[in-house]
Image (cartoon, rainbow, N blue to C red):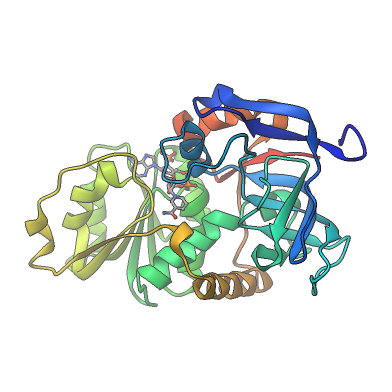
Length: 330
Ligand SMILES: NC(=O)c1ccc[n+]([C@@H]2O[C@H](COP(=O)([O-])OP(=O)(O)OC[C@H]3O[C@@H](n4cnc5c(N)ncnc54)[C@H](OP(=O)(O)O)[C@@H]3O)[C@@H](O)[C@H]2O)c1
């Protein structure tokens, strides 16, 4: 709850560092929406790994201090800027980007990054759409050129982005293989669109994938941990296959020769580099998915604002992903 008329609770970072630099404050000024912005009363905010990288100060994005982390908000519009059309006070919405930060009771977003939240989804599910689903569509189709009938391996399918890729790829007619590191994660991946799931902690899982994919191999790998898997991914590809690097936490040695015979591609991507046009296309596809019912965000661990530091530890070092981690404000 807001502590005063113009004050709110928010998680602020005053210095870069470990999870302990996330400070819950109760006297943060409410942001004010400008002409093309909306003020959202936040119910839930998705927690993404990138927010931990930014917090350390070693990521290419270094916001001026102090800042409030978070981008994937779901909530209710509280006020709109003078030039805003299409939204009004009381509308349920979600975003993939905020101007003032999402780990807060209120946030301001530019109206072109705000979307109506269907009655089919609750606020926690709304907070699970943003970065994960936009990245999933961007990686699969706009950068990975995936097509119906192709086979995709979602290497790390049990987390926020992975489940989104599985649901989208299945809806678009791909054959979907996924991996997870726990039994529960594997169950979740199978329930959310994968035709077959493998355990990336089992020694022989790559041989199992190879056998399952047969001579044709994998057309597209959506890779969540390239620093561990990239060299192996190249062995799994079909002729003309593509590895899409979504997640990477360090260097890895590969043999470029492994790309030659099959004319394979390795392509990195960052949602931060997507154009407005690309984001509009993502949004349209995701909207259709919500309407049709195949886009159903899976909410995993939930944390109150007081436990935000724990959430940042768990998203990097937790025992196994089970959907999207969310921070709850209301
Ligand atoms: N490029 C971009 O624009 C972009 C956008 C969003 C996210 N990302 C990055 O993509 C990655 C995934 O994001 P997320 O939000 O889905 O994170 P998340 O919810 O924490 O999920 C992490 C996923 O990685 C899996 N994983 C763990 N060890 C693995 C291994 N050895 N091989 C393959 N997968 C493994 C996890 O499986 P288990 O836990 O079941 O073992 C889980 O499925 C992160 O590195 C994130 O920073 C990049």
